[in-house]
Length: 178
Image 1: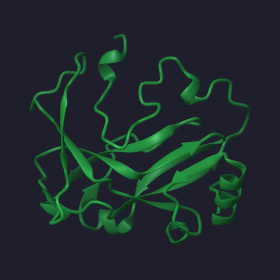
Image 2 (image 1 turned 180 degrees about the horizontal axis):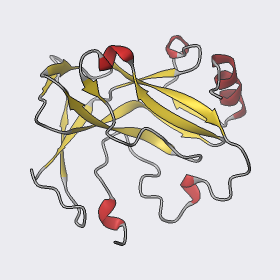
Image 3 (image 1 turned 180 degrees about the vertical axis):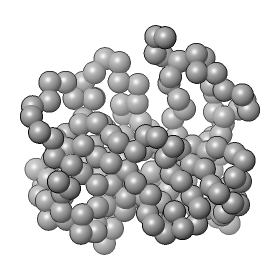
Image 4 (image 1 turned 90 degrees about the vertical axis):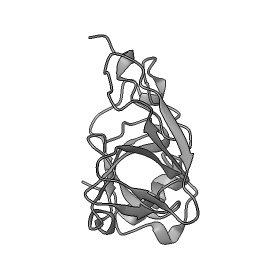
C-alpha cells in the first residue's frame, strides 16, 4: 500500500515525514516531486575499487545547465532534505526524466525507516542531455511498515549514509568487511 496525498500530509503534521522545502504544488496524488540540487560530483579516478575510498570532485551546475555524457557516471543530490520515521520511502524517476534518457539511481531507490538527509542520486544517461539545478528529477513515495521497528536507520552505529548533506555522497562500500 502506498500513502495517498492526504496521508502524506497527515504524516507530515504528525512529524513522521518531513520534506524541506515543502511546496504543496509538488505533492501528487500519491507522491512528492523532488528536484535536482545545485551540486553534482564525479569520481576522480576512472577505475573504482570497492575496497578503498574512491574520492569525488564536486562542481556547481551553472545557470546554463550542465551537459551529461552517456559514458560518465554522476552523483547528484536532491534539493529537498527529508526525514522518514515510520514509513519506507522509495525514490523513483519521473516519467519526464526517464523520457529524456536520464536514470537517477542505479540500485538505491529504497530508503530505510529513520533515513534523514538529502538523497544522493546515481545519475547516468542514454545520450547527451543538459540538466539544470532545481529541475524536477524524481518522486518520493511512502509505504507503511508492517510490525515494529527495532532500530531505525538514523540510530544504527554503522549507518553509513545517515544525515546526508546537501551535496552528493560517494560510495562507502569500503567501510564494509569482506
